[in-house]
Length: 270
Image 1 (cartoon, rainbow, N blue to C red):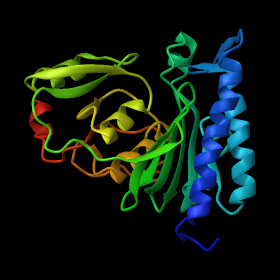
Image 2 (image 1 turned 180 degrees about the horizontal axis):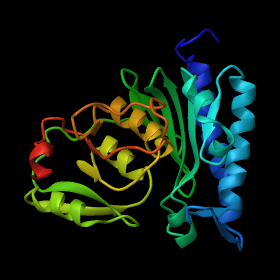
Image 3 (image 1 turned 120 degrees about the horizontal axis):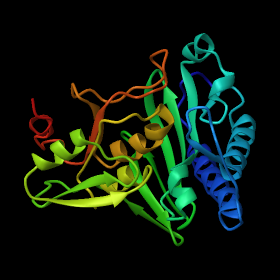
């Protein structure tokens, strides 16, 4: 593959299928009596994270041997200078929403995204429990695949009151509550993992504010889907999120939304 060449339709389809296979690997663990370990930062880790990681990394090495992979489960093995030298890379979260996985509420996903020069260009989000996949990218549209059917996605625009705002099941804070309180008439929607972005892409949610910590693999694939559907993931200065541009893989604060005309800056408060 030549540098920064667009993915062929065949390769895009292979990545969508790969996310589905990784989801199946997760479900084999989900349906068993699995154990939970903890990483140094106290975040949970299960055999499902590792099984999905192995499935994805091994397949990407075959499909695109010239594109390096930054996965949550192997990021500690890659030094910052090496990673920063990658202009094109896969950013992968083998199991986004491990806390939701442990709670067995089904709200977890597989995230695979291709990034070129900091811009997320194609991504897949797959929900193992339902078997539904969302995929796309800016200028490519976005698609929901489930039950053997594909459906083109489009955000809700204009977004009329009551605005539907994503409220994380595992991460709530006073700043988020203040933001929601300034939105006027709202309908909070509790949802875990990257599913929040996908629901915006489908038109089922309007806004997702996030002021707590996330990592690049939490957002890259979902940003592709949302941008393909006409929405955006913006930092608090209104700039689209970019990736692998800093020494840290931690994201800054952001607002994800469908209708870009919404006065989200006003909701930030003083």
